[in-house]
Length: 152
Image (cartoon, rainbow, N blue to C red):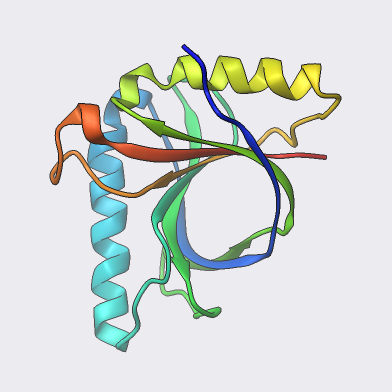
């Protein structure tokens, strides 16, 4: 299957997030818990998100994933408890908009890594997924996810 990759320079983005460790099988529950907690906090302080929800993956150990889960914010906002204020760094990135089930995204990751190497780039080791809808809203075949690899 052919994928369309885009090389972009992205600006820094403010986020509110939680960083967790989880087995891949527990991610749906963890994402729901974290998103719910952050949205409740934002309601309490009268703030709104700016962009899509995201997950940042700092490793690919499927039994012990190191994941940052959160929302892009219009401005930096202080955290509370597990909820941390942070940022997605500015810089060059390669991205691909994928439509389909989360369970089938490994093919996109493999194709992106091949493209990165063939085009003389090197990934930083972190990958981001931006979620434009959710399994609660649409069938799996209609899920839209932007996969992003920041580059060195």
